[in-house]
Image (cartoon, rainbow, N blue to C red; front, side, top):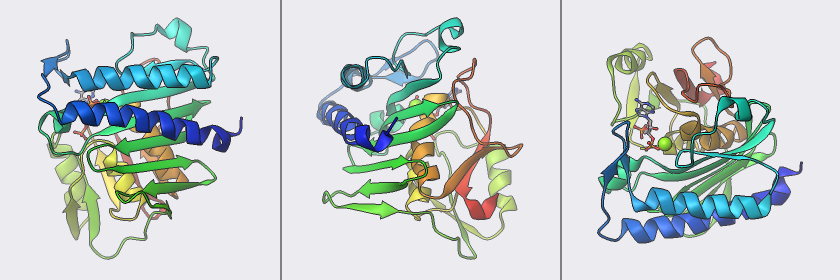
Length: 255
Ligand SMILES: Nc1ncnc2c1ncn2[C@@H]1O[C@H](COP(=O)(O)O)[C@@H](OP(=O)(O)O)[C@H]1O
Ligand SMILES: [Mg+2]
C-alpha cells in the first residue's frame, strides 16, 4: 500500500475531527466519567464519529480500533494484519482542564508496527504527521508545513513526562539522566515535541493503551526517533491486551 497517497485524506479526516472537537472545547461542555473513572465528553464521541466515517469511506476493508468504539474481541482482532488505531481525544483530562494540550490521533498499523500517523492539537492549531521511512512534518499555527527531525541532545537533557500521571519510578528515571530540564507537554504531544527537536526523552513508566501512543510513535519514528520497551524492543501493536508495557521514547542517541 502506498501510504503517502492516502496520507492527505487521513490529515483531512483528522482536521475535520479537530474542528468538531474545538467547537465543543469552546462551548460549555459537560464531563462524564466512564466505568474506569476516566473522563469523557461529547468531543470524544464527535471526534470518534467523524474519524470512523472518514476512514470507512477511505478504506472499506481496513478495520478500525478506537478508544471510543465498542470492544472488539481478540478472536476477531487476532486476524488483523493491518488496522487503523484511533484515539479520538488523547489527554481528555487536559481537555476538561482547558490546558489546550490534547490531541486527535490516527495511526495505521501493519504487522504490529505503526507505519503512518497523524496527530493534531486542535486548540494549539498544530498538526504532525509521518510515514515511517519517508519523513515527518509539522503544520504550525500559521498553516506553514515543514519537515521535522529529532535533535541531538545538549548536556542538559530536555525531559517530557506526564504531569497528570507522574510517579516514583518516572522521577527516579529522570534523576538518573543527570543534568536535565523538564519540558511541559500533555497527551501524545510529548512524542511530537521530541520529533520536532524541542525535547529529548519521554519516559513512560506507567499505564497507557495502544491508541494513546501509536500515531505519535509513527511521527517520532518517521522523524528519526525510537520508542522501546525497557527490554529494548520496539513498542508493538495489535496485542491481545491493549495496555502498553512501560516504554521510553527518544532520539537514537539514547538507545
Ligand atoms: N491507569 C491507566 N490505564 C490505562 N491508561 C491510562 C491510565 N492512566 C492514564 N492512562 C492513559 O494516559 C493518557 C493520558 O496521558 P498523559 O497523562 O500523558 O496526558 C490517557 O489518555 P486519554 O485522555 O485518551 O484517556 C490514558 O489513556
Ligand atoms: Mg488516550
